[in-house]
Length: 193
Image (cartoon, rainbow, N blue to C red; front, side, top):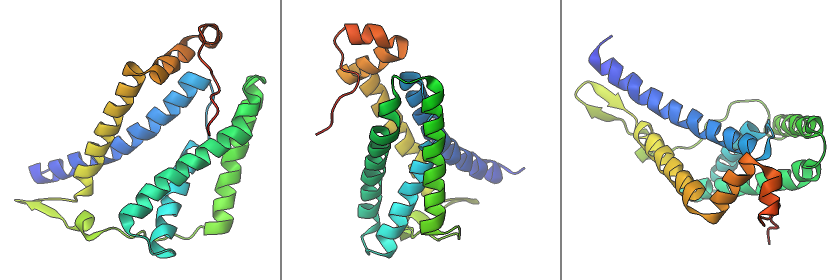
């Protein structure tokens, strides 16, 4: 393997590893705090991709606006799923929450198949994301530089929240002992406006 090929593979691995790492952090936080395996986690990511796709193709939103809107809509979907499928089962046996999580995952996947079909759809990418950066014989997509940088910034922000804020203290406390956290005065199910 040549040095140029090694560098290209290194950047590809950093990009893919950054995405896998962010998904794994989401799974870990949900399981570590709620003791729930959220099978719908990846399905929410799928919805985010479709929100971007339809935001750009159907509503003709600018790509950046569609991405920000997709993140917000995905968060709303996660909150709705929590309110409908997970929160009522917090005090139920673990198997009930597990079955609910599997049901939500199947529901979103099959709803996606019915609404979006199973056909691959090309997603618009701005020119600045597809213009290849060439350094000598090394060719790198800007996305291979941007994704690890954004992932790093998100992880640093998450670490700051978890270790420097009161909600972070509550998350760490809940992950150790839920009952003691309740006794210490933290509200475990906070109502959203």
